[in-house]
Length: 417
Image (cartoon, rainbow, N blue to C red; front, side):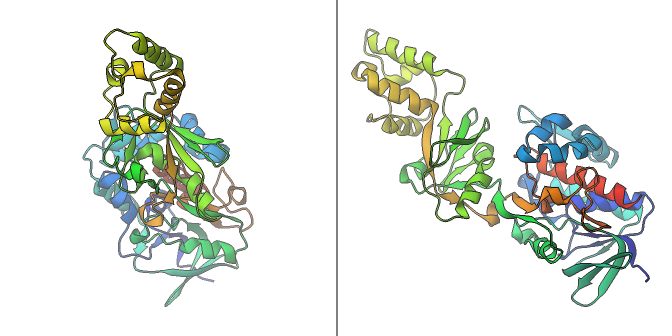
């Protein structure tokens, strides 16, 4: 039966555009099917429209940040490491710059549209064709290839590359369409949840700290049994809803998964307000301050410029009033509580802001359904799945775009063999 293309790519996001460009450059006829009216809508919205497109980390360092997905993502990151992604974008006319201390890489122009346009033009110039405003309803094996069913037509191909994204940022078109196709094909999935999304808190005192940002801090997520589930040394921002910033958002998938079972109760984020100072050092400083002549207050002894509202919250957690008590009035027990609060201000968490504010999806196609060296779906010859459709997500810092490009490259190259 005649095919409409050698390769059909479903989804014109970061992964789909990269895969289309690679496959077309290898001489295959490529058709990209995209349900929205344009390519790369999520790319355009990413990084505050700046697009953090990769990381400065090496492939093995980057792989470690994918947690349980480390082993799976290693071959892709080694085949197309972050340094090579930067080189490819430079070759496409998009020079990149690093953001100091955060391991992030942005286009030098600070414009996400330059990243999207470069990916689109690379694919188009190589010969890939695009079909926009074309929602896919079903995919199925068809003899020696695959059939893709749209509302008004069917398309056939030899190799089918699925990268429609997950459910994050649904306004850009990623509404989880691919999950139904996977179920129809009998493939195992991990329930998707929003990830890299701000956390919510019902505690009034937390929202009263809105606007306070801690650039240098460590955060720890504790479950109801007080077990530390995850930790990150990244900035945190207090908001009118709870907590945002990379430190909090990196923890959000765990909270979102807990919410699948019902209301989130007993979960807390512990914020280290003074990460560069140890507990014993702080404890001794408070002891010395309590004995010093003149009765110095807490702020003077700490010598730290913590916001007054934050200090008041720390003191309340320690059972003290005000934000700057005189230390000679603070007994040993209160000093210990104060050190604990400074090194782990407990913020109760009630959930996340959900899919509309999530940057990525955690969950999706189970990784053991896919070859980690080719992205081929093991039980369905000629089918490939990659990008955000997989149960694979990393923290903020360009890791998820890097994974999208690297898995897309593996899939396209294998599909063209």
